[in-house]
Length: 204
Length: 204
Image (cartoon, rainbow over all chains, first blue to last red; front, side):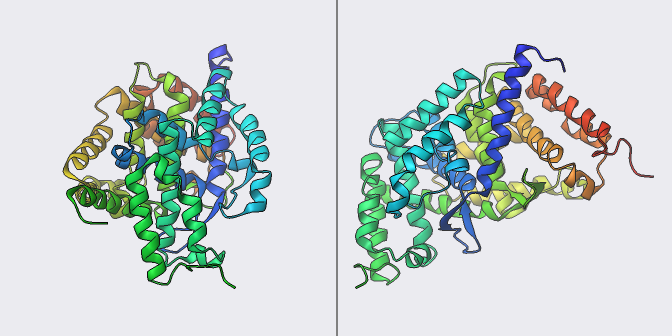
């Protein structure tokens, strides 16, 4: 294989594809539904994409499913460098934006310039929740960890001393992207309190 | 939340989304690039979807990227019931089609009928490599395990006694979906033989 401009473009694309493998080793706080292990960010991203295919009709505005899927597939790829920041970790959130910005530059920078620009814009669109697609994608990104907690008896909430007020506050923007899913989520949160797997108030 | 037809549709969709979590526990023969563990099928599906976004231009015919992504995201979901069948396992392939057909009926059958029909057709399209989208998706599904082997010193090939003739034969259909990627793959296979991480001939 001689190195024409075309093969060098392919080599850049392959460098990105190979680097992406590392997302499979980034662990999140959530547990798999069977409780056997923590979830990693690659499989989390896959799950959100499957949710988008299945639940797209619950966006209050029609959405471009292709753009939504692209966004979800790459929304957390910066964690390869920046790590996963737990949503209830106030300290970690102080420098999250800066760490992730640097990661986006390095990781998307492996690609040819046109693709770097496209994926960087999609990632920013997701972060800013600026469009119906981004708001819907962000709603799924919040809903799934809730479901994981519900179906593992609130395990991750319990480990981190999370109470219902925090869960309601941090997840309220599900309503912006998918009101029907927020109705559903609120019912689940209420049930979790009733069943005693989510503390109603902060511990004294 | 009262059970209107709409919420019951949502409950069917959520049953499918929750069941999909199990794909994260289905292990493949391939190792992650860092060699720490086997890859699971959920993260494999994510990786192929990221490849499709990155490499779509290498399809010889223009493809519908949305349909390609949907196909890749669900192409292996049947493994939740049917398990992963290693591509060099001749015995496992004898009843693979039947096992996977039953799995597709149960898993996609969790969804509302219109979505069951859509995903079942996408899954069949992928299996039959009947369209440019399916042939491109299938090319990625072959290319990635090759890359995993190359970058882990042929570990999985070595463990299963695979030689270059088998690798060339089982992966040749990459050429149908993406000729440029097959050129690239052949170079890698040749390099692997030269470097001594892939046996050129069957062991005596």
